[in-house]
Image (cartoon, rainbow, N blue to C red; front, side, top):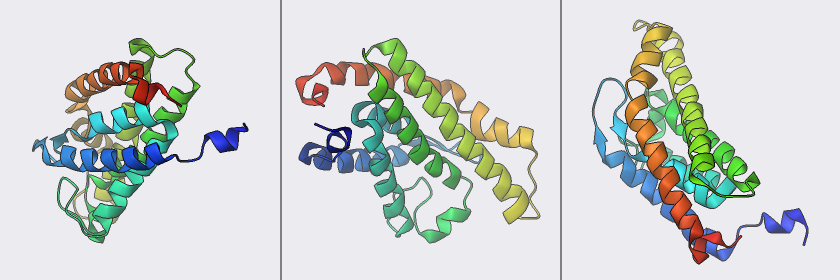
Length: 189
């Protein structure tokens, strides 16, 4: 069987992908409002989706973002096309990018183990923060002029404040994913 045939989306994938879209949306509602960007459970669901689905996790995050942009209130601050101009939109872009990168790395693993999955999850967190902080900084300084934000403040309020909790979520996501990947349902490729 060629590699292209292996990458096709199976019926099982069609069932699991929307579940992770919904879990990411649910994670948005479980939040602690601290500062400009609230702490939510979305990161752990992005991590688990990527480690379970591989690159196909991108579709779960894409569906989530598209549903929110179409007006469904699935984001931490609601929904609609205007959400593009909120400080948290960059993190949503980061969810899609991180899901792709983490998923591709997980697919390349020959042996699944907690340490390897945790490293992939933490790399995904760096990607999410990279997109989120960059977008926050650009939004505050180029788009919403009049409310400038220093780069240090964007990093502090957009990443450093959440780093301890998100690191724990990444480790939890890696641990749960390792256990799930041992189950026959998820271990089939």
